[in-house]
Image 1: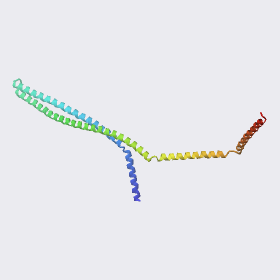
Image 2: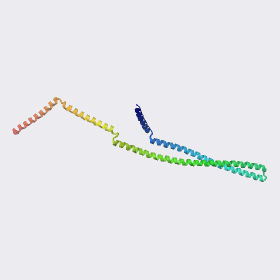
Image 3: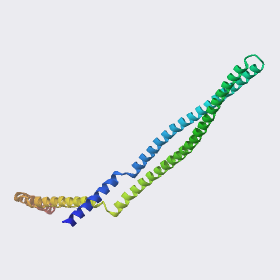
Image 4: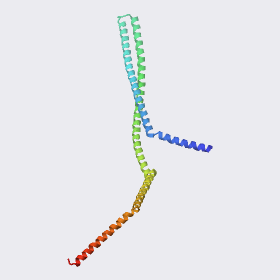
Length: 237
């Protein structure tokens, strides 16, 4: 009982694997894989564009902060010059110049951070660009290989069908139909011959009598004509 169940299980498993192989068409799966790669490529291109945009923005921010830092430094210098020239209170001049220098330091710190971000985004943009180039090459390579495999699959399928026909593996049904056709034709020929024999045997007695009379009448007429010709010759005519 258990042996029978195990054997049944093995048969079922084999059939399931065969059905799965038919469902999992390698060409269709490869095409889907290429479509997935192209979708990933599109996402990577969007990501790279966004990273590049952040790098450009960081560069622009660094330039803005550098401009502000230089401006505050210039203002601090002007305040100190005015203070030294007695154009304003010295203590007030020093205080405002110090505040301007603090602002310069803040902008200098922003410049450092912005440039650091710029380098980070540009570095990642370059990496993404390199990865995208590699992905494009792989997609192109896989598409070319898929074209070749499709062509080879068609050729192998055609060769398989031709070789199968030459081997007679799938020609049994054709041969069987031909044999049945031969048998049917032979039966029809035998039936036609049988009907001919029946028709020949079924001639009526009257037909035979008429045929015999027609033959006798012809012989009598020939004999009569012969006798008349002889009499004519004897009379000297």
